[in-house]
Each structure stands twice: as C-alpha cells, then as structure tokens.
Length: 71
Image (spheres, rainbow, N blue to C red):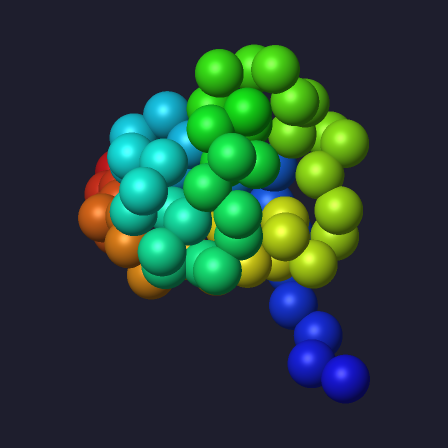
C-alpha cells in the first residue's frame, strides 16, 4: 500500500488558491466534494485520509516553492 503525508496547512492553502475544477481534475476527487471543502460546507478536518493525501500531493506539486533566507 502506498503511503503519503497529509498536511492541513497545504490543503487549506491549495483550497484557497486553486479552482475546484483544477483540484478535482488533478486529484481525481469528486468535484462536488472539492466545492464543499472550498465553500466551508465540509470541514477539512473531516476529510478522509486518502483524499487529504491526494490534495496535499497536488498542492506540493502545484504551489510555488517558498524560499526563505535567514541572516
């Protein structure tokens, strides 16, 4: 069985910055589920683990990389 990581920060950020259609087509998750997550009708915390992993992986691939320089 494939293992993955679910990160709630990434999930919330990708839901905020991406369209429902892009997330649904990129993850294979039902469009109505993604729309409910985006609207707040369904809580991210109630998302099943498999879908949370899919959205996290989608977010890691599609969000710009943040580079921080420490001095």
